[in-house]
Amino acid sequence: VTEPKITEILNSHGIFISEGTVSNILIYEKSEIFKSEKKDIFKSALEVSDYHQIDDTGMRVDGVNHYANILCNDYYAMFSIRRYKNRDTVKTIICGIDEHEDIDITDITSERALLIADDAPQFKKLTNKLGLCWIHEERHYQKLVPAIPYHKELVKKIRNQIWDYYKALKLYKVAPSESEKIRLWNKFDKIFMTSTGYEDLDNRLKLTNSKKEELLLVLDFPFIPLHNNQSELTAREIVTKRKISGGVRTEVGKVAWENALSIYVTCKMNSVNFYSYILDIFKENKERIYLSEVIQKRKLKEDEKSSNFLDKTG
Image (tube, rainbow, N blue to C red):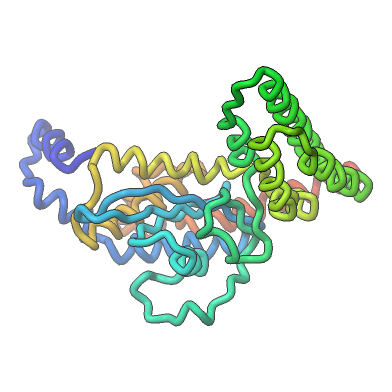
């Protein structure tokens, strides 16, 4: 909701307040607490998570192009708006480093959990455990536009093989085994080392084949997703906000967006009422819950449930 609309709603209910005051409340009041909340959320997420998904989307800060980076999984979401989208920038984000901290990133090597991303270059070489998104990869085949009917049939055949293979990977995630792992590893070569005679398709197959290890990381870690949908869905939150507001004008406004969206989406992911959560912060409720603790308890409960299930099934 835009600040003028908030002011209009409040004024219509007999609360006479200026847009400037509304802006100051949103941006400055409790800003340090919100910043601390965001850091604690990320810290807890790092402790409980086996993997993270990452994506970015463009936006403007005071009329200058920036990029909103989204790091998330089923437990949390963290938004970081930065000027550039290069590898060094992404490295600081996944290491939890504030953009204003004076740290030599050349000495940083990421020891974080597995990272799931699309094929963008800024996400490469951050970790030796990068998993690529199958949905993004298959879209490249959708974009092929053969003119010859025979070539159209070739593309259709390959796409069908890819989706059949994708379904087999989904089944493997449910019941992984060494024999099936070997079979799927070899099956990949049969699909993507094929020579069809259609040059554009063959070039695309070679490119996919070059990403074999990243696309098949799931064979070693069956718990990771085969796609990057979570981060794309999470990115819609800031895209919607961007469409409504157009962007932010100040550095403090940018930080307010990062903090509020991180808390808001994490609340949704953990079935926590966002309004009540924020209200408790402003009321300085000493008995309030903390998202960092909610994440920890949720993970513990899920682990106990999984352990009980394994005990019952032998």
